[in-house]
Figure 1 (cartoon, rainbow, N blue to C red):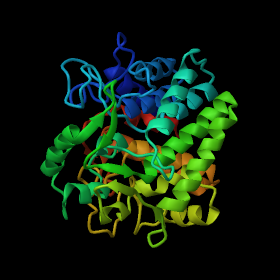
Figure 2 (tube, helix red, strand yellow):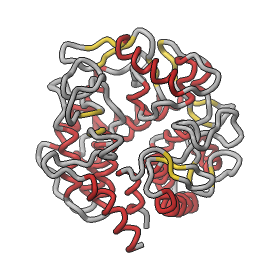
Figure 3 (cartoon, rainbow, N blue to C red):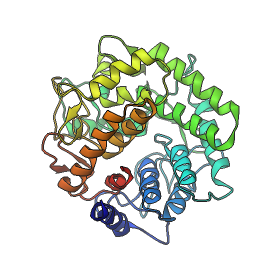
Figure 4 (cartoon, rainbow, N blue to C red):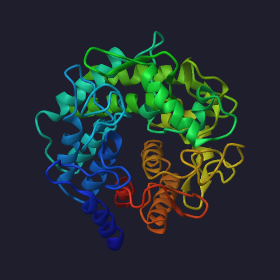
Length: 377
């Protein structure tokens, strides 16, 4: 374990930018700041007992607009085509910052006085500006989910099988199809609006984490309200998972069984639903694999263990499911995830993602969030 923790620190040290106060996920492949990456770096820094986690969390909140919106990228260098803002993206990403703040707090790090108010403004923006009439939180681009090329988006892309070039073409078109507010933040889309199970779960979880940190019952009430909406509107009884909601565009692909459909375990209070999902996470025919949780069911026709967001294991998703397993008292599952994740981080070279059957690294190698291996006991 000492060697593993040292390797995790090396991965983060290698991309740390002291002037900017954060780690690009991989300085060559991903040379900017990504929101949820930096939040997971924060969690890894906290596990390593390094105060740079406080700095990194603060850095991703520095891109916040007056409205409360937090961008999914801050650019280092030339503008990237992610909307009209010149120095940051006009899209957001899962609000892991509230959980990262709680992890820092519980690790004994003092948070700057501005951190929790900034997180509150960010979550208020999602609640105020990004909710459907039935109370779910919606996204206007696959980028906002973090799971860019998930098979859940295939109906929007118009594909029966995966073609990454087609995804890239649609990603660019969706920037044009987006409606932006006066500050340059994305608000709506003419062709892609979705209420994903995972994103909604992570928002509800963030509300609960902020409630814990602030003792503000409003956030706890919102967390419970959103969790109830997820159970009522997004549960898919046939698969025993939660599915996404299609609002503008979309179709049957919202029900493809992915690990995203397990993340409401973080917030649901329905023990029967939770039990059905938890059992699948240890099922070799479903998600369980020698090197972590498959992103897509093993027996599903869209499962590809090597293709980007089509089946590989992801360190940040392993971590989130580990948190959920502990919430449900499933120490057996938590221990399996910890073991898979430690072994895969080493075998893959601390990769962005990896083949869950072999542990072979895929994507950028190394990538900062693979340092989450330092978290597991």
